[in-house]
Amino acid sequence: MVGGRADRRGSPVEGSRPSALASSWERPALGWVALALAFVVSVGEFLSETHPIDRLLLLGLPTPFDGAPTPPALSHLADNVSALGSPPVVALICATAAGFLVLRRRLDLTLFLLASVGGGAAVAYGLKRIFDVLRPHEQDGIMLNTSFPSGHTMLAALLYVSLAAAAAEMAPRRLRPRLSLYVFTAAAGLTAAVGLSRVLLAVHWPSDILAGAAAGAGWVALCALWRRHLGRCA
Image (tube, rainbow, N blue to C red):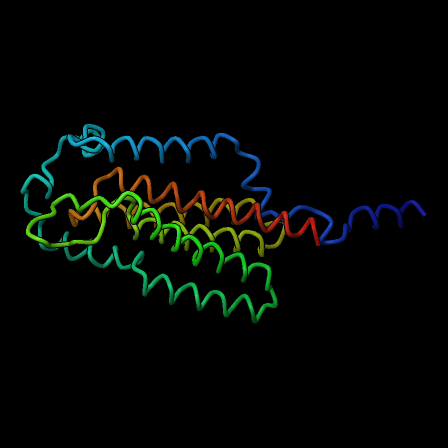
């Protein structure tokens, strides 16, 4: 019957369509170009000793790098916001979200989250070892860990973008467009807030932040495409 055919056509098998998580990363080619360009520009700024782009991004304002003191209240706020990208907080949130996904029997999204955050953290450590640059205000052996790219910002991008992608895929189809816009905007906002806090604390140049955000989002995108490839091969 015609009605029967319509019903069958309107109810596709769930696994027969590409996941929203992967397809959302494939459509905007400009997004990939932007991530690559942001990282390349950041590397170029890293190689410069005068940091002209960094100072342009700071709009010429007095900064802690130039000896300008940060107000105590602002410094305290920056410390708290910065914690949203700290390894212990990221690990705790990631483990909690992974447990939730296991309870929902979404092992595919669990593996995606762990690969994105865990694998991305290893990439962040590797990049820091490769570039091995000191902090902006490195003096007398203080803050000996490396600056480029920003580890807190990259961890924030890895975690919050991964969670946004998982939430968007789990959303009901009719709510997915609006929910996707909300969760990805929230992820971008949290990542930007962590990055800004690191600049206010004078432990990173803006280019360190840009590189961390681009590398983190790019790694999550690669994990989403890898997940889709595995789904096709299954």
